Amino acid sequence: MPRIVYIGNDKWSVCLESIIHLDGLEIIHSFIPNESKSLEKLCQDNNLPFTKTQNINDNHSLIASLDFDFYLVIGHPFLLNKDLLSLATGIGFHPSLLPKRRGRAPINWAIIDGIEETGVSLFHLDEGVDSGNLIFQQSVAINETDTAASLIIKVSEVLVDNLASVLLAWPNIPSIRQDQKSASYTEKRSPNDGEITTKMTAQEAVRLVRALNGPYPSAFIVMENGERLYINEASENGFD
Image (cartoon, rainbow, N blue to C red; front, side):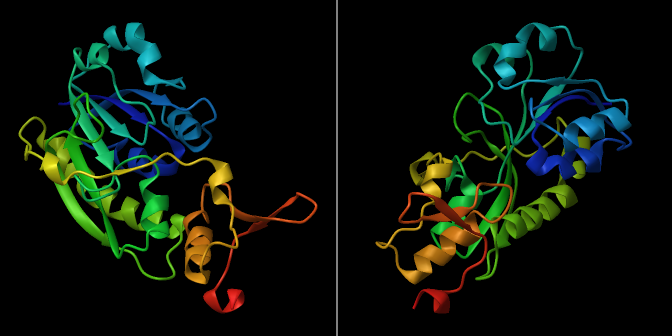
């Protein structure tokens, strides 16, 4: 029976919920964000040992003391360093069709950039940014009304539907090399990047509002007095 160290965040907490009582595997410890609410409650309600941490790499001593087979990383913002990867390998998740759109804020950028599909990619962990060999991949359509919140739900549904079968097959899982020459990257975003400006088209402004409507600071307009007016819904007609 595979023994797993789970490393995640609240945005994708439904993933841990879907496997926490799965026959055929055992989650022996979970690492969750310092500010976690849903994952903390999930661990407490199910007597799952957990540790709050900002950066998983600060927990080497504890992890080294655990008897486990692999990591499962679902949404942690820091790459596992060489020291942790020397203890065990693992499975990572990224909400894009790798090797395209590796990196930060892929959900937000997918809507901002107006692409018509994103995806779910599960891959073998390595020292690179979302660069490990692929295990599973499936596309997820993005429509013109999707927000970050609705897209997270779509991606989560695909992830949950396929995660268990991948984990239960460990270590006999696919390992398909990514085409490194086709790789592209998205950049980290901050709350200040949510400003709607007069340089934007109506379409660009609406996409920004949709992209930040979810578990993120909303898009905003800076008023004449310097205060921010936050906007959670918009349409192109409203900017004509």
